[in-house]
Length: 126
Image 1 (tube, rainbow, N blue to C red):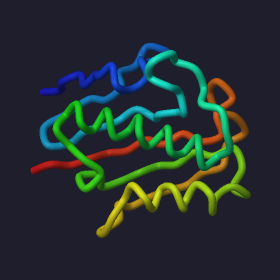
Image 2: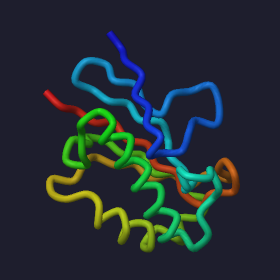
Image 3: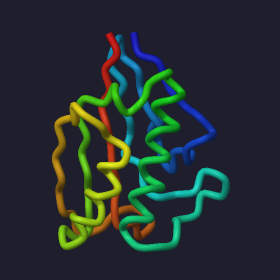
């Protein structure tokens, strides 16, 4: 059985998708971009500032299902420039402790709303 997970603490979906879907012990979170939950506007700043907002949004979605970053087993990072990888990775490391989840990082030509970074996660809680 699947359950829609939604919270006003993260930006509302901007299309026909859910913030997250819980399916048994798994939570599949939609990609988050650096939108401010209160006004839906893209956060100003460099990739580090955008990554911080993205991960605050991910944290809110995880909390809505009584989960934290320690429950994340896989993350996928989409970036418009891998030249910004070090800055993204430094902020990412502040949110994810040991053991780190598996991760893929992919450079893409563009992201919604002109974002520089988008992150999606899958979490597991037995």
